[in-house]
Image (cartoon, rainbow, N blue to C red; front, side, top):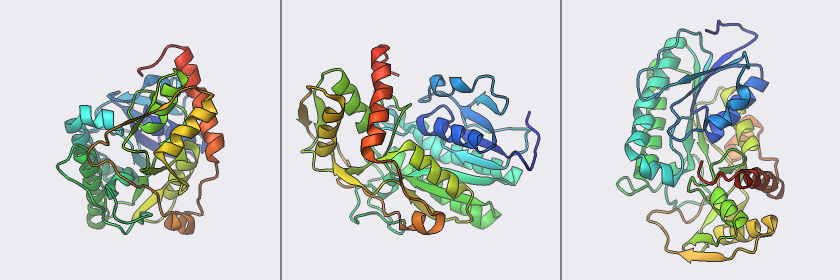
Length: 324
């Protein structure tokens, strides 16, 4: 059990074995925090945290945060990052996705309230749905289909934001909300359904790059270290409304596919398929709030970040790991 020390804060990270949760854990440890990681491995991967084995500042608990959370430790900050976050995952686990966004948020907020801890929830640009405003500001309420196939994820996160603000207003919990836009980097899963690992995996194995629709839909890709830096800054702030963290550099999916082929040196071609229901046609964050309040903006150029990501996946493909 960790004991409180002003010189060494104690943070809880749910979803600690996930892509972003593991990078956040690394950043917190580097900042001198002691971290209690929580994950049930429904989509997390033990490989993402195995480098922390033996680290006295890290403790791991296997637990589903949709169930009650008991910790005897003092806690200074709770980061709620547990949730399936890719289309393949939340379409396979829609009920678990809704539960971790509702019950999991309620339980982690209760933990923060009980421990008098700060609280930061990982929300998403999917709160904006298929947006009618471009770029998307935090003041935009979104265009979401609550009963469509993506509704389990979108509405779970929207509910989570509402619950977070209710705890702030009613109980005075020091809460933060980050709306995360498309992020990429090492530790993503090759077959998680998101476009970055999908295209890189296809390019590295010589398969056609699958583009849904005509490829004119846009995304804005932020490298993981930039995103985590913005999240850490937000956690140290006194701001309670949602904050967009993402890279406003926008590109079409077709342009992205062509860039992946170029950077991998692949002979793969582009293959077009029908666009899935409710797939957003545009996505680009307005990061004025993050710049103004946090002094944050992305620093890693796409060309640099994508090379690092490709090299990570090249190693996974060479090891024969095409599933995890």
